[in-house]
Length: 275
Image (tube, rainbow, N blue to C red):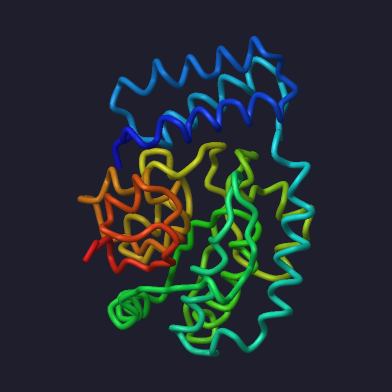
């Protein structure tokens, strides 16, 4: 997905936020905002601009994990919500897919309220189920900590169905995305056995950066489930390579217009089909 005019303000907010959380001064904040303006005119994807911006701020401040301070609270809130909402999502493929989508309700700008009354889901469940069960493996490209906990019913269901499931998280911290350091910090391997690294510290994931198990799954036709708008914005640039199932909450006007959806909807798109 290419950057749209609506993305400018969001990217500038990211610039201010990342610089502030990294302990930057007003000069760095102003410099980061100017970088957004310079990159915006290039017609890149929103994630490409985000990654260049975040690497610039990290390089200037030497702060490795600017968003790490809020992850413990995010994990605690998600765990509480998982317990409170037991039984809300049926023990079926559709229920697991709904849980996965629901988990994507928050991001680094907005806390997840975990309010089930605000949950409106649209997805081609039958088509997605057919695609997922058409292989003995599956790759899930994770997003943040809340996503991970609400993805576990889908992982468990697929494993019980005889599939080998690989759950990919970032190698190094970026925004509030789940990283390999978080896997150790929060004991995630005890909850989900096959957690693998993307090998990157970037928002989204470009196929050209894939190595090892991720690349094998991408190239052998295993179903790929990509969580969140960052993964959609990046991988949709390579839509012609292979089908990808996108599961997310639509949180901005740019993605809503691109997909023909409404802001606030929780969606699952079968095989990259936007219909």
